[in-house]
Length: 517
Image (cartoon, rainbow, N blue to C red; front, side, top):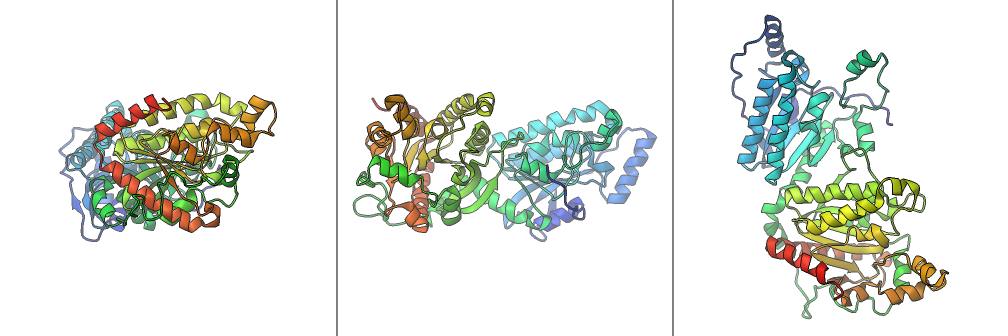
């Protein structure tokens, strides 16, 4: 649990809007609120709120430019009756979401609210259903939805449009939760535990992606949209990154040959993949990707350091990246079921936004423990396989290093499968296979060879489509290797994006139906 730092000064909806959007680009979509039949006391509350905030409701909506890109915006105003949502506010919000969907615009939301407007009771409470339905239709249309949670965000607002973002970030030290602390204390006679309902604690538990100060919102949103909204413009970006190919049909780096790494024994390959200085997913993204936006956790209170989830572009082509992070895995903290649930979040994101999914496999194996069993590890592997095989989005898997057991298997099924020359894939560590067959670990090298775990063996078996060279080992040339792999990823993603979706999906199913036959 993270203690909250001092809160930044609160920005009202207009000030935040003007900070994020390009100067002078704002156009309001708000229509005047029609007369309401309400009690005298509620009418006085509304009049005071309007006078204090110079707004007629707790929601403002409109459009503007973000770094030159047209976007729709919905934002809450806490000064208007604590940002609460009643029928009129919900109607304005839903109308704006529907307009953004109809006009094909990315939607940026900045909730801030105490929740449902108590003066309007249950009918206000049920407005969260209509708001959620509008957001769902927007996402179903393949349009980005980015959320910035502000201080405070509680109740039905958090439990509807505040928690549905493709990317969700929050204001530093913001109070965020379902049941407000004042209500909790009134109901239960004791204060809510300190430090729980904070943006920082939510980020630590994988409920939001990051805590971001006001002056960095535009940069984060712009980077995210360069990936999330790139499906329509990817061909232009990729064309500008085209590279010449070698005369033998491989790319200019030689990637794609069937004999890369053939001089190494299977055990040499396994040993090379385990070098501590071998570049992993983080080094690859730093070196070869652009517009990287790190995401965090499942969104449901779990995150695992063994998996890295991000948005990125390689050679101009956009993708969602699922990378098994070698830095986050150890004997003490192996890849667990939470990592696979986080991976499934990435698959769902790719599906919704019709973005390619890139899986980077680099694991010594999934957890073998009571916690993993009780956490449903086997079931999560099965669900990853199901989701990945049936994913409508293009998929690209890369054997970046170790590919051990079910933890690797969960991320393998793809339209195209690549391997680093010292990448490998097997049902167990070779030592484990030796223990089963020979009742010792002395035959690990022999088992690795017999099982055909090397990248080149996998290529010959039709499991791997392309082998990316290491000269002679990625650990000895980390920058050059990452750049080489990044260029190959850009080419492969461009190829996948250019294929007919129905034909590509049918080919994937045929591949795994007939593999090894």
